[in-house]
Amino acid sequence: VQLQASGGGLVQPGGSLTLSCAASGSIFRINAMGWYRQAPGKQRELVATITPSGITDSADSVKGRFSISRDNAKNTVYLQMNSLEPEDTAVYYCIAGVQMYIHSGSNFYWGQGTQVTVSS
Image (tube, rainbow, N blue to C red; front, side, top):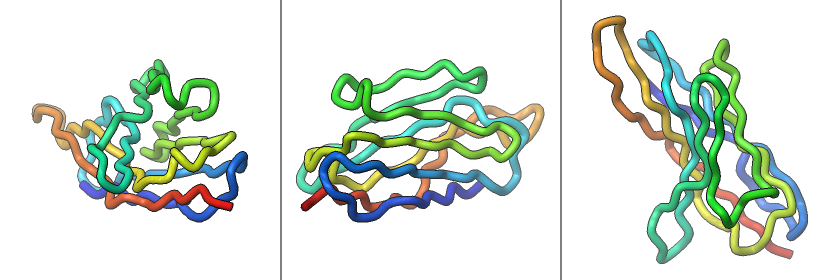
């Protein structure tokens, strides 16, 4: 199973970016999906999660600005980021709980990370 994240870049404060993360490989079912981020010198922190049915949760620091969604047919999770602030600068990682076979358990897989830099 591989997770390929994309969409990062440099954006000015107040701007927007959309991150995407597509899962591929041997996949029977994808359970929860989400995004974490890690700023320089800080621990990795949870940004947002989404269940297969679309129930979402997000960190207080991004509520009202970030929105997570998923396309189950494409095994893809998205993170729409609006009103970006310099404090949002970090490497963003996607994560997915993947069940590879009908009788197997679920394991978590990470994407490779995509850099988001918010600066004027």
